[in-house]
Image 1 (cartoon, rainbow, N blue to C red):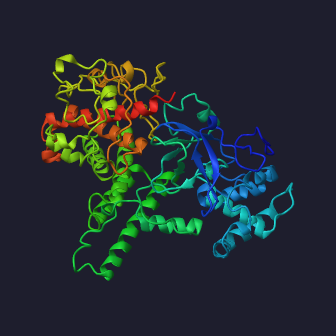
Image 2 (cartoon, helix red, strand yellow; image 1 turned 120 degrees about the horizontal axis):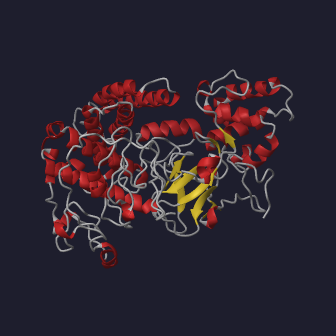
Image 3 (cartoon, rainbow, N blue to C red; image 1 turned 90 degrees about the horizontal axis):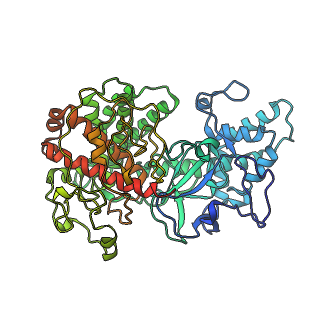
Length: 588
């Protein structure tokens, strides 16, 4: 096996004798030839890969500057320079330029001949001004250690960055993964997986991670999404992909109802009306993109964003039905901003918590199939424990034998048994009845300043990219006094919400269960994101039950009109969160 120049340096990869990238990771994945696609290759599983398994850890070859940091010359802030320009400039001006280019040689396009003639012409025309600027910057760079590169060579480097770079920088191994709008892996920047990254090499080295979000059989291609967030219309994704990669993204993988327009089946909905609606919807998505950019750069507060999102939601609701992808994206953004606002408050606002709950339930309804994975979350809540047997999926004899019995620690006094399962429990393994009403504590327990370290059992935090959600770390007075997964700690609440002994006790009972069935949800395989939403549902419900039951029951109508319905919903959300956490926690 031949080592590439610069081997051993941070972010540098090694290659086989024929120039194929060595992926590492214990031989779980490898690069294989894939004729007919841009780079002509893809990453495939060499063995069965379990959900939650980290399939790649890689430090960037060239790091992107933080948003507000100035360039090396101290003249340009990162947010004032397009990412592809910043990274290309840094490669060309780096003293290690030749070593970096040798590493990047494997990235698409390897040469002009690697691209279709039409793609090359369009790319050259589109990036003409950028190439001129980069060539001028080469000449102006003081005491450049390497010879100047020709315009065509600069264009190839720029396209390598445009086609392969990520928000964190340029990666060689990560650049081998192909795009899917419904990927089987998720990417995380350094530190985005709280708890799991604590003290790990990935956090200390700033390494990005790629994690399987479903069980992946051997021989399957591993894919990630190049576009974020994934809740975008096909038109928006096609427009962005075409602009960056100069190729079509292909057909939409989403069900028609998730991209449908209001009244489009009516006779009056002609082509002219359709165009007007699509144009208006595109404006909403552009506004959301802009708001994301403002939040990322720190130029907008979450209070401002929350107000703007309400306005965009009102506009979107006149164009598309409630389960549309754009509505889902707005709800996700509203939850993020509301959570940030709650964290900044000494006493959390009940109205904000109600907004978090309402938006989270809509997200579950739209893309995650509700709390139980069948029907809407609101419908599941409204049934109040009247789910028909036909709604519960049949499970194999092996699955029943492995998980059908009551979990260790389950309450025997609850009267639940395998013969009379909890109708809210479609996953099996824990038939503990719903918890009793919470008694609001006289004094809210303080929140620990830092999450407790994971227990020796290996049940670390779930890799969800949301600060403050270190799930089921060691039990503390703040996190709850009862048993968590595998007898661990209680459910750790984000921000200023604190926790109670009742919460910890409610979290106990179930050992670390592993399930392979994931339900029929549209995005049911995206465990990380689903867990984040379930965490928001549980936390907001718990708070409202304790502190604002009148607001809870009046705001959600028949769906959560009683404590029993609300507590069943909280129990279901917490239990499903624990199930997903177990899948990830078992991975060392």
